[in-house]
Length: 180
Image 1: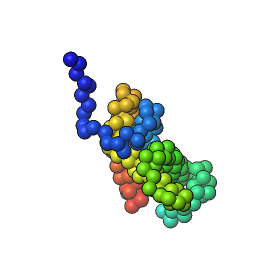
Image 2: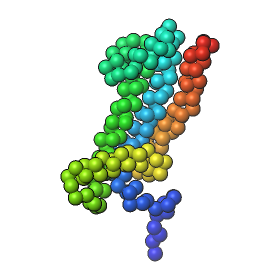
Image 3: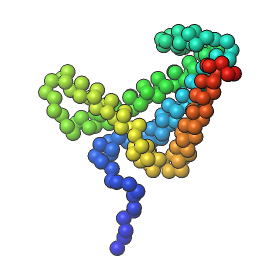
Image 4: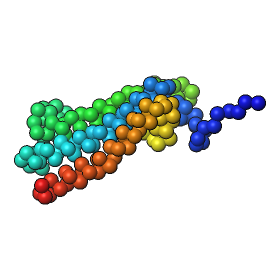
């Protein structure tokens, strides 16, 4: 009699089985989460540097209020903050694009709409739902499980970025109020 392997946690739901499409996709989910966390650290460091170099808070807000200005700000003291904003937008965009196949796969199984326009709305809503689902702890744990040791390393780096984010934000606030 052979024993089945023991899995930790509850069994995967049907929707969770559509959320990840294999080992490579699991690495992507973990990498995008790490990139999102890194973008915050870079943002606080970049804003702190800009303020320490003499920029005013009003100038900072005006410099980063459009995509063209963000790209132009890369060569200024706000370079770190501009790169952080660009990384954040890139991570969100990639997360959305990579959730589309899961939405289509789910949509094929459940097709309630009768009009073309309604079908595309349904796919849009499903894609947004899969983006949110792919950021959950359960999916992240499944991704770490599927990626093994390297996934654990990526998750450790992501975990380290959280307290680093708090430290960088605290430093930014101290610079903003003029302590440094």
